[in-house]
Image 1 (cartoon, one colour):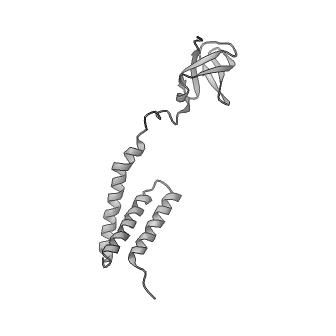
Image 2 (tube, one colour; image 1 turned 45 degrees about the vertical axis):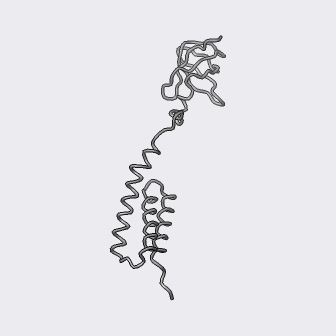
Image 3 (cartoon, rainbow, N blue to C red; image 1 turned 30 degrees about the vertical axis):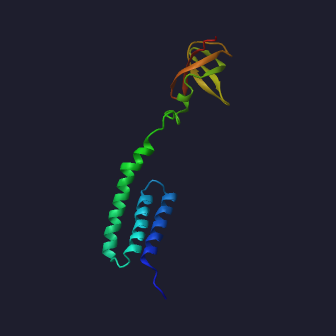
Length: 150
């Protein structure tokens, strides 16, 4: 029976690590899996490499790949593209928009129809049906003013 080439074992380890990253994201298994795949390529070129040398080269590859992620890839992922500064802050996306009150503002509080829902609003007392403009946000409450009609 023929023995399995060692580079195939490294590629199997790489697939398991990368698959583990898919199941449990965020634990650097992807980058260590890339190092294992690179180790498989090295063993294609140098098939007689000893086990200790393989372990040392793999550790170096894993360190370099994780370092490359931390210094080169991660800063690009953390950067917000221009125009998307408010992407996951829905309330801030509403600033400057105009809406109709579905509940009059009395004593500084009311409700406005926004899309298919309603939002709490604070501002000057205004009647039901008045058009308001969002000027700010406090948590989940919109700060509004009477919209200039013109």
